[in-house]
Amino acid sequence: MAATSGTDEPVSGELVSVAHALSLPAESYGNDPDIEMAWAMRAMQHAEVYYKLISSVDPQFLKLTKVDDQIYSEFRKNFEALRIDVLDPEELKSELAKEKWRPFCLKFNGIVEDFNYGTLLRLDCSQGYTEENTIFAPRIQFFAIEIARNREGYNKAVYISVQDKEGEKGVNNGGEKRADNGEEENTKNRGEKGADSGEEKKEGINREDKTDKGGEKEKEADKEINKSGEKAM
Image 1 (tube, rainbow, N blue to C red):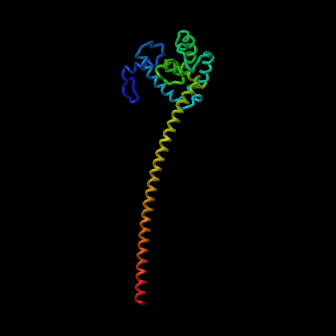
Image 2 (tube, helix red, strand yellow):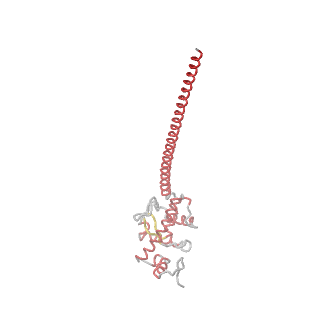
Image 3 (cartoon, rainbow, N blue to C red):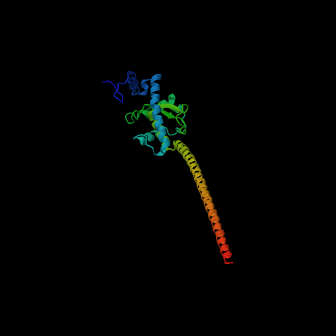
């Protein structure tokens, strides 16, 4: 049966080979650069999703697997003194460290799906997934360390940092909005003031017209009085 993609189009043999390789345990592919690149791309997608998660939700309330309690308990039982806020690569990658990690990881074979898939792990939990701050690790190792970081409060630094930046952005946007509203209010006031001045000017002219007309009527009345007086004489 030919492999198909989501659009029911045949998938190339190369992609099928890569997909098959990714389904194998890490030990099966050694140091093949093409396979490592395919693993890295998949791991990067996983890392981006995870970083967004701990940036938007308080990490202490996150549940990464169905067996978080078991993973955390076994991890701290076997690595009680391991510093996890800033990891030392030697504690994960040296031959001595691998001998200690191997039995722990194998305990979760069949319990955690894809327990030995390659996953990106941050060295300094207060920082993001940069090249300098990232190492490649089995998924169960990632879960063990990140569950511990979440429960022990170390990953909260990322959450607080991102939330503070978003808060500052909101304040800045609010200030700009208030400034715009203030300008609109000033413009409105200037318009109202101009309208009032025009109205006052119009009323002034009307009052002057009425005064002039009143004066003219008084003059005409005086003339009539004078005429009447002359006739009487």
